[in-house]
Image 1 (cartoon, rainbow, N blue to C red):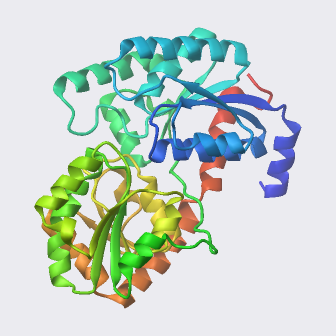
Image 2 (tube, rainbow, N blue to C red; image 1 turned 60 degrees about the vertical axis):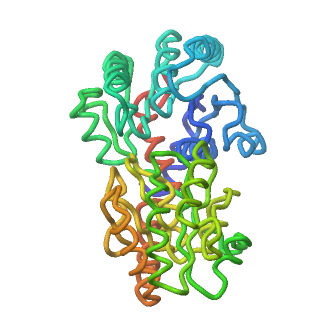
Length: 390
């Protein structure tokens, strides 16, 4: 169907209403929710968003005139009183909102959002963005989260996985049936052509080359492994600089770790706060680094591709479905030596970086645009509610 014909069909449909619910305050989940919230109105949906009060994406949604509901949503299951309060408010919101669909993003919001939708009699879509039983979690937590997912399977009209790896994991764990599983790859916006690079990173880079991680400062992202690799990179390449850019609960711990390696007094290294959008930081880089311990499908690598920055990443989750030898390098997780070698290879070869950067831009344009992600997601919504609504 042509774009004109598709637009005409959408214009003929009655407008439908959707509530997007999420729980993580930062990182890829609120970013993905933001892209959907901004893109769905043009496809015939009236959008409202429910998320934690201090979520990174909410100011932009407020500025766009979208209706936002700030709820006591928080990570983990250690405060059942807050979870009960959030569930109560969600049930009330869904009941009175006249929604045709609820789309819950992330493990915790997936629990509360699906329960609220069931009580209100509204169809529900669930996007795990990395199941809560994945990664180095305790047996008790793994058993608890897996039991939750299994119990909520009958309440889930569709599970949208962000990569094929996540779909396979869902089938193996039996938390979703194949007929209700879909894969919609994450998307990232194009890199703005007129945006100035971050001045702190530009100053650090100087007349040398710069590799950096731009990520939430959490254990999952493996940034301590990058710190362990930094002395080898700096020793091998006198022109090299390395940075970690981000905010999060491990900020103090990472600073202490950097100090034990002597990086606190190293002028060619910096730990810097994040100041969005990510493209501000990426435009200053020669190499993007993401040494994650586990992932679903990180948006950071797609943002790097959009800006033409070669990637050095660990071969975990959906990262393997985007990064290959034509766009960057994949290494084993928890391996500072392998990480350092890959960074050294790319920082030491300008022609290689140029080839990888061009390929990365082409890959982003072909497979990882935001409009593609929004359109594919909306097509699944339409299947669930029908062309004429619920």
